[in-house]
Image (cartoon, rainbow, N blue to C red; front, side, top):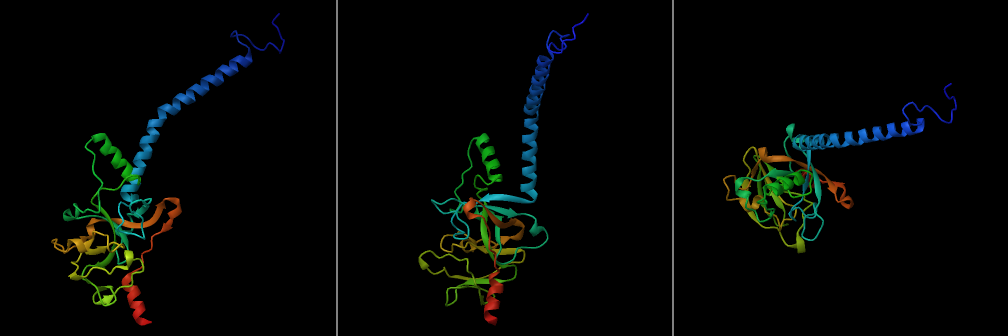
Length: 262
């Protein structure tokens, strides 16, 4: 007669019930572990593809590589460089306006600007890693990507300076609370430049330390940059955490009109 002792359990496989249960649990755990390692490459590739698509078409994080936008954006020697989120969508529906802080590809004549010193490694693997790092803001962008503020747009005439050391657009002084002049030095004078249609005149907030439109007035476009070269508008400081904030973009031309009315 078969044993009905519940303490012994069913041992048809030569193992008590508890041992078989533990064995099944171990097999399931091993299958899950193996499944994770098989799926990991797929997850990594998916994440990279999504990151690429988002940063190509929607927004991208940029590392501020120089001090040209001090003190709005930190990129000075010895400080923690800001990382900014650049909106790539807005300018598909409307163009840049005065006051916008933009990221753009410098024309060919801007490529040798001393303001940018990021060198491309000779090693192919290192070049690839640098490109991936730049996509997520862990390395400087391409050395021909610049961060400046729009001062004047197509058809406007810009010059500097009036008796109060202010930039003029179409003969009217700008109100620029974001300008940084280290040591209180005056801005540099430059002759009137009429911005061609479809182009922008851009300047850094750190007026004494910015290789901007003023440094390229001998170019075919008189220092202006094509609107088509604009990558997007810098909207937010996302790193470091102590610097989290929006990026102010007051229109200096509207501000000057308001000042005249008061």
